[in-house]
Image (cartoon, rainbow, N blue to C red; front, top):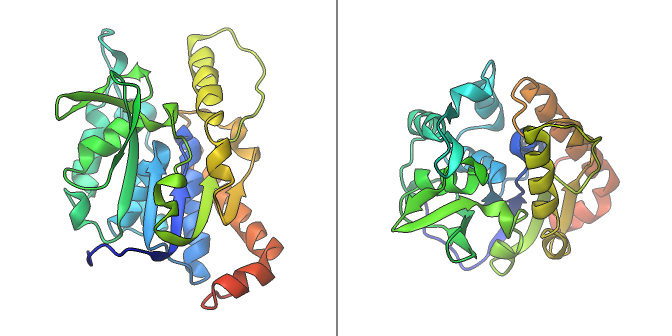
Length: 268
């Protein structure tokens, strides 16, 4: 990776949202096809997961291939509750197998990963040092997954305090495209622990995105993804396509502004 710069022309912020994060890949694909390539990425949870694979040099379509025919149990191993119902060994094995980089410094694009220090109640931005544990921590939904220990601190999902990490790269980015795949939506009540856990985390994380939404130069967001559950790995291609189509519409709606800010852009 080239040395970090003081400012970047284009930064992209990717929200958390569980399986809805596959839409991030469709967004990135549409951006790339039109000549837009982020110079810095900030991601929380699913956004960190998609962001790290992209920053490692994989194309969005290549990343999608990794997940085809995958199911949740391949990424999370059930365990007797001890900080969480699931261990993250599957996530760790997946990243070790598919990531070329082992440190933030080795990535092709600078990346900021957001997690939450569960002991001290603080949001933590990881952008240097060891990579994999930081990404796993950012994805570790409380109760569902065990906290991740890093340097004698315990971290869980970054969405508790910052599910949409635009502010993290605001100062260093001339323009920011924010992708929020999990705006607050309604969902019919179901009497299940899974429903209660998902909805509780959805409202908690969604409520802290309002400030960051206002910090975007361009915001790509849709409530249409709400029909997909947090752990839905059966519809990854459908979610990817939804993100792609959303971005195509976004380009059509903002053509003149985008031309002004990004002269390199290519329209159909």
